[in-house]
Length: 98
Image (tube, rainbow, N blue to C red; front, side, top):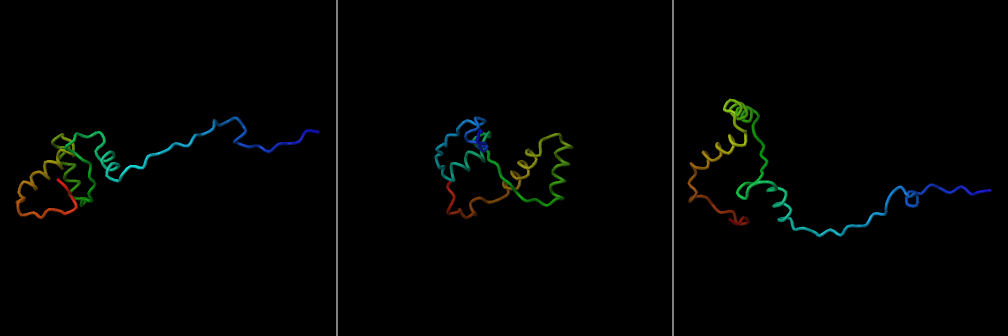
C-alpha cells in the first residue's frame, strides 16, 4: 500500500526557488531626490500643499478658462507673490543649503 504524501509548495515544482536580493540601503537624501524629482527638469521639484477648497476651485476654473495647466496657474501665482517679498529681509533656514 502506497503512503500518502502531504502537499508541499516547496517541493511541488510549481515555483522556482527565489534568491534573496541584496539591497543597498540608500540615504534619505538620495531617496528623496530620486522620487521627488523623478522625470522633472533639474530646476523643478514636487511639493504637496493643503489648500482652501474655494481657492483651489478658483485656480481650476481660471486654468480651464485660460486653457492652461493648473501647474502653470499655481506657478504664476506663486511667482507673483514671491516677487513682492524683500528677499534681503528673510532669515536663512539653518538646516537648508542653497
